[in-house]
Amino acid sequence: QEQTQFIDLHELHESEAIRVLKHELAVLRNIARSRYQQQKVLICIGGGHHAKGSRTPARLPMAVERYLVEDERLDYSEPQPGMLLVVV
Image (cartoon, rainbow, N blue to C red):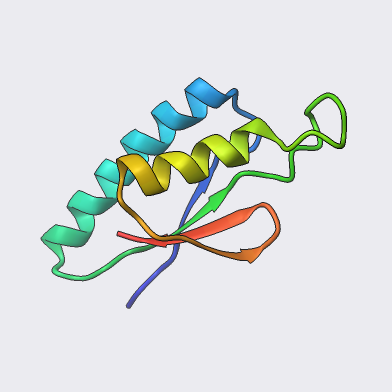
């Protein structure tokens, strides 16, 4: 049975969030490989309400999206605001 995993980053600072994400994705990727199946992962990045100045784009979502695409080479979708879905 396929179960979606959840990684909550929305209260972390940018550098800490990327470190946690890197570790969690590595663990989940190893589990997926050992089971010979893909693993859906829902990543909570929040809407950036904690950021100063509501008109400036939130840095955490931008950093996480950039990390997923450039470092992990993963496509993502955004099923709802503040949530990213990837498959490892």
